[in-house]
Length: 188
Image 1 (cartoon, rainbow, N blue to C red):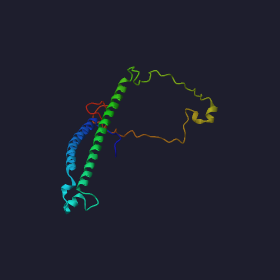
Image 2 (cartoon, helix red, strand yellow; image 1 turned 180 degrees about the vertical axis):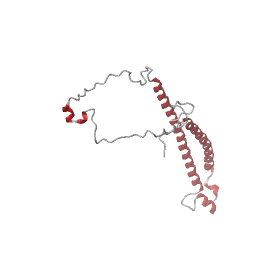
Image 3 (cartoon, helix red, strand yellow; image 1 turned 120 degrees about the vertical axis):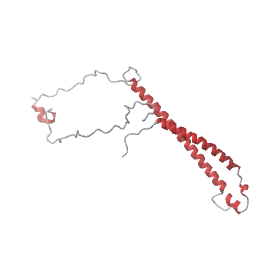
Image 4 (tube, rainbow, N blue to C red; image 1 turned 45 degrees about the vertical axis):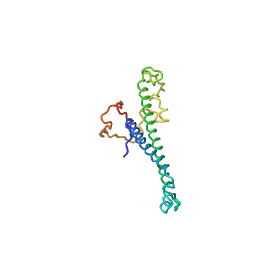
């Protein structure tokens, strides 16, 4: 069964994005070399005999070896651009989560400090609520019209509710950490 919490280690996300970028740099260099070699090969290199015609696609409708190499190179370049976008998205996601966490922390620190830009706790003495006077038990007419208005009224059809107080508390999955105070690895 899936848990109810999703935790993202932002440091791990940043590290992963850096690793992806490093690997992409290596692959980009290798792809550039491959592209240069593919561009240098001219169809005349394969010759005009049967093997040369087969390699250039002269006897096939699907194209020759050079066409397939160009298709593979295009696929590699698409992969590299998609992977670059993914690494940028991971970095952006991590950055935005950190900014959001910082804003939330600033809001929490500002509570009750008098800072007009931060949320504040409600006043300690809220205005007293206006209450309607309850009819006195001597007002038999009100209770005869609607017995539920009587504060001592008990519905005879109401179910009896019992609560099992013997259940054990679920273990805390926080790993012994306090109330999410942050630290070296922020988890969200």
